[in-house]
Every structure is written in C-alpha cells, then in structure tokens.
Length: 487
Ligand SMILES: Nc1ncnc2c1ncn2[C@@H]1O[C@H](COP(=O)(O)OP(=O)(O)O)[C@@H](O)[C@H]1O
Ligand SMILES: [Mg+2]
Image (tube, rainbow, N blue to C red; front, side, top):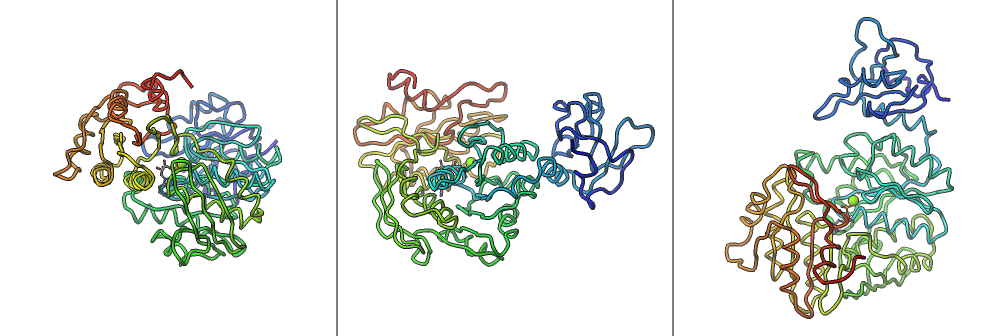
C-alpha cells in the first residue's frame, strides 16, 4: 500500500490540512472514477474546475484531495493538499504510485506535426525485430505483444499512462515508444517520463486553436528535446527548417535523417511506386538496403526516422531490413482500401502540410488522374481551410469537397471556407456535404490508372455532428460502393 506523503514530492505542497500519512489505493482526476481510498486530484481545466466535484469524489470514497486551491475552512472529512501546479502533481504522483516505470524502460518520445503514429509503429516494429519487447502508446492506443488497450487521447493522462507503463514493465517490455503531442507537453502529462530518445518528425501549423501562436506550439515541442541529457539521443529531421533550431538547443547527442545531402541517414537510391518504396540508405553504420509496403515519399522520412532510432538503440542492419519488410501500413495511414483498375487510398491527412505531402507523393507514382475527397474538421483551427484548398487545387486533378467531423459547425459553412480558398480559375471541384455520397461521386469519376485519395479521417469509424455522432468508416463505404462484402 502506498501513502499520500510518499506520493507527494517534498516541494510540491504549499499547504495542507489533515493527516498526510493516509493510504492511497489509486489516483484519479475524474470524480466519477474514484473508488475507496483513492486520491482525487482536482484539475483546473479550460472549461471546468475539478474542485466543483470534490464533494462527489469524497462521497465516492476519496481519502485525499489534491488541488491548486487552498484548503477550505471548517470541518473536512478528508486530507486536503494544496499544490502549485495540479497537472504536475497528477503526473508525479501517478509516477510514484506506479514506481517510476520509465526508469526501467528505454523510452522514446516521438513528436512533430505529422508522422508520429506511423513512426511510432515503425520504431516498435524495428525494436521488436531486434529482439527487445517494445510497448507503444499513441493515437491507435497503448499496446505491446499480448496487450492492446484503446485510449481517447494520443498521449493519455498520467494515471492511465503510468498504469500502462507499469504493466509493460511487468510483461517484460524493455522499450517504450510513444507519441508525444504538443498538448501533452504543455499540460505536463509526460514530465515524469525519462526519455532516452526524442524524435522530431516534422513541423507545420496545426493545433493553433490550442497553442495560440506558432511560436508557442514550437516551444511546446522543443521542451521534449531540451530535457535530454548528455547520454541521450535526439533524432532530427534534417529537411525541416525547424530541425536546425532544435539542434541549437540540444544538450545531448543527435543524428539527423532526411533527403538532404548533409543528413546522417539519407537515401542514396530510391524507387517509389504503388507497391511501396525501395531504397538504399546511407547510415553512420554503412549502407542498408530496405523495402517497405508504405506508400509515398514522406513515408521514407518516417522510415528513416525509425531506422535512426533503431540504429541508436543498436539494432543490427539485417534486423532493421527484416522488420521493415514485414511492417504493414498503420490503420488509416496511406492505407489501400480498394485495388483494381484504379486504386483507392484512405489517409488521415488533415492538415495542409500532410495533404500537400500526400498529394505530391501520389502525383509522383500515379499514371492517371488524382482524385481527392476531403473536408476540414469543425470547431477547430479554421485558418487551415483555405490552405488545404490551395494545396488541393495545386496538385489534384479532381476534388470532391465534403464533410470531415463538422462538430458544432454547419457543414456547408466549413465547405464554403474551403471552396473560398481555391484558385479563382480552378474548376475541377464539386461540393457534396454527405461524405458517403462524396466518396461515391469520386469513385464514379475514377478510370483505369487513377488514384482516389480519401483524406482526413483515416482510422476513425465515426463522424461527429452537432447533435449526434454517427458510425462512419471510409474503408467500409469504399467496399460498399465497390460492391465488395464487408471486410
Ligand atoms: N513525415 C511526414 N511528413 C508529412 N506528412 C506526413 C508524414 N508522415 C505522415 N504524414 C501525413 O500525416 C498524416 C498523419 O500521419 P500520422 O502518422 O498519423 O501522424 P500523427 O500521429 O503525427 O498525426 C498521414 O496520414 C499522412 O498523410
Ligand atoms: Mg498520431
């Protein structure tokens, strides 16, 4: 049994009332999840202050409340601890509760605007191929060979995160690779994870609704790298202008990857096709020949990031090649949904940068027309809508503008924002707010040699509207429209 006083750091509490040496059977920040003898960490969120639910937490059995608010006057049934930063306290307490699991793991954090999920999947595959059991955390959930747990957030909240890591250590994992979102960094969710490597995939404007400015967003990402010490490694995309800025701030060793001449890990020969990619990579440990089923030029960047990470970890070149050839596309990331005379690809690209990369990658390997179906999420960063339109009309031959997750917004209004961003002379588009119908129209346009790209939702199997969330799966719709049985 753990006790509250051992879970609290020496300097974290500003004031308290009640007995500090009380047993703690678990840590929760959601009062509804509190069980007997749990500690309730009340988080002051953007919309709600968790303190409003303190009474409910106590009614559910909490023995202690940790909050940034001072202890109230009057009789208290439970111990009350005031801390400087509630989110920091949540992370450090959860970490101590689960006995600092990252200390027993080689932890790799992957950050960047795009490519995190794919790169995490690749790194896990390469390290596993090297014979070391590796746990992964990200948009697709938390998993290792033998356990898969879905998550709501790309980087889950501390109690969930550390519980999983402890389970991974128990199960014999020696590595952990995780997506680290910029929000998670700003909200102190990963403060107590000792990263041995941090990987920078790419940087472009996204999540500006949350971070306000590009600079704040970048600073959030940078904080992951600034924490690395002299025996740690940074793995940096040399093609991205922000890579240079990160390198200037590092106190650790680093390797760079990219198409640039000066990258430590770079391709000498490449072949991109609708079958995948083949390449010879120059690396500090000699040449490595690789082939992968992943499609598109940008995926070679993700592959090089993963190869860099595996090389740093000491995985042998033949294990790297073997791991890569066996690796199948991550669900919803440049995934083939139909292959016949023409190809239909579902992808998660939902930023202008990702969309641009996707389109250009397919322009390079498509004989016929490039037909794009896309929309933009509602109640999120609106500035990207015209930019997405710009990249779409620049490279796609035909565009069907449709709905993504409209959320609280009117789908037609989102479409209007997108359409307003097209070049005045661009006539190759139609609008169809109903995503199922939009996919149908795109498939009707397709002829032999064409590629239909369905962007924005990837692995998602739902569509969020103002009043309701409905089941929606791009893959299933493609199969239905092509007259194929359910997968
Ligand atoms: N290295 C990259 N650079 C730019 N865009 C990328 C890169 N890797 C993937 N993408 C695009 O971004 C989308 C999201 O990729 P994903 O691996 O899920 O990254 P993240 O987890 O960062 O969102 C992909 O579907 C693809 O269109
Ligand atoms: Mg992700």
